[in-house]
Structure formats: C-alpha cells, structure tokens
Length: 383
Image (tube, rainbow, N blue to C red):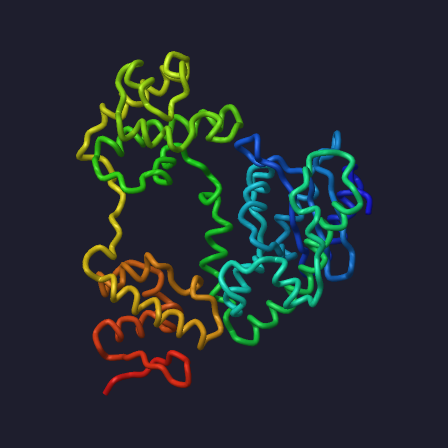
C-alpha cells in the first residue's frame, strides 16, 4: 500500500477511475490547531477493484488531476457523511464534486436510521468488520504505518459495496428524488462559506434584548474574521463563553472588560482587548430596530402536547415506510406545523407532504387518530 506522491502517478490513477461509473472517496484531515482543515490523505476506489491512497503533503504534488476527477460529470463521486470532505475540496479546489452521492443520507432514506455510521453500514450491508485502532491517529505525521494505510483504504473499498446496495434499493423503491434536497444543500457553495457576519447565530441562545444581540453580532463577527485570518480555531482567539459574557454585559471600558470572569487576567489591556472593546462600541452604535432577533421556540405557545403527538405520528409513519424520521421532518418543522397550517417548512412540500404532512394536518384537526394494535402505533382516518 504505497502512497501516491507524484503528479504523474496521480494523473494515471485518476484517469483509470474516471473510466468507472462511480468512484468512492474519503479524506483524512487535521484541524485541532487550525481554523481551516489540513488535508493529510485522500483515498479513492472504483468498482473494478482498483484503489489508491494519495499523499497531499508530498512535496511538489499537484492535486489538479484529483480536482478534475471530482468535476468529471461522467463519474459519480460517492462519500459517506460528506460534509467535511466536501468542505476541504471546496476550500482547496474551488469546486464541489458532481454528480455526487452521500451514503449516509441514502441510508436514512433506506431505513437504516438517523445519521447511520460508516461502521454500521459496513457491518450491515458489506458484511465486514473494520479495525478502528487507527481512527484517531495523527494523519499529518510521516511515515504512515501499514495499519493506518489499511484503515484508510477500508474507508473506500467497503464503500463500493455499500453504494451499489443502496443505489439499487433506491431504484427499486423509486425514492431517488427524496435525496435531491439533501444533496443540494451539500453541493451548495454557501454551505461551506463561513461568513463572519453570520457567526453570532450559533451563540444567540436565549438572548432576547436587541442590544445584546447587536454586541454579539459584532464581537462574534470580529472573532470569526480574526480566526480566519490567523488560521487558528475560534477558541484560540476567544472562548464561546467569553463572547457570550461580553454580549450580555456590554463592557465599554478596559476595567469593565477585565471584570468579566471569562476574560484572562491582563487580557483586557492587550491589542485584542482594544479590538473587542471597539467591536462592543460598534454593537452599541447599531440601530436596535434593525436587529434580527432569533426566533423563540414555537412550542412555547401552548402547543407542546400537540408537538409531542406529531412526533409519535412521525415515528409511526417512518417505521411504516422504512425511512429515518430525520429525513422527513425536524422538530422545528413539527413546531411550525403545530402553530400554522401553512407554515413555510419542507414537511408541507413535495414528497414529504404526501408522506407525512397531510397526515399531520389531519391529526391536528381531528380527522385522523393514533391507536395501538399488537404493540405498534398505527394511524387511521376518522369517519
């Protein structure tokens, strides 16, 4: 199991894989000390039995043949739980693989459960076992051991069988279109563009005051941009708890910033402290009437019991159809539906509506009931 470290060898391997109807792909990366992931290894395999490992850390290796393969419309690119792999390809190659298939999403449609692991699919579909001893090793160190290489290669060789089985299952059940929406999100560049102006949303939590949100927007945005420019994790710039404390307290002086329990001693008098205070001032300068407040939980409107009932219906429908509940509806969808029959949510559109949405509306308005027969929840229409 030799690593491909020369551009010509990579070009030859990609040309062979491009002649196949599909190629399975995986990557190994590190990001514990960086903001952006550091690509350490690429694994690929085809249905003809050919598989290879690529060393992106090799000196003078040009990854263009790999990116050309990812863009080749004649070959389906197959990943499992692809989001982070696709993020790396987008950041380094400026493109997203197409056509594309995610076996984790497909497995949910085929009834293997929510967010099914690769190991579980290897066990259940490929009828094999994988050695996980190398799973959390340092992939940036060279040389890689034979155990590491064998583990990495197994991530794509078993995926060949998994893809073939899931693709056939989707074809037989005519559910291929069910994947389109999920795949569209994963293959959208917006999914991988970390906009500092949107960084506050992850931390908004229960903040309900426009002034707090305004300061959070500025401080979180400053931290995100700083982490990106330095290529270090957000927490190396400022911990989440500190960002939230600053947004809540709104310190406007060095002394006030230094009194916050999450700010290290002396930090307030550094250059970074001055930049944080400047961000706080920008927050106070925002027009409160223009602040986009986070939505309150819809279930607080007295619909908690109805939402719970819709969850039971969702699970019953998912079991009957052999599909993971997560692919049909989210809790947010159910809360919105409980509040509004015409809510703008995916569960009231397309195949999700015919599968579940219409039943949910009927249950909500007393035209459908849930009952237990032989230990199973069943759905029945009322006269």
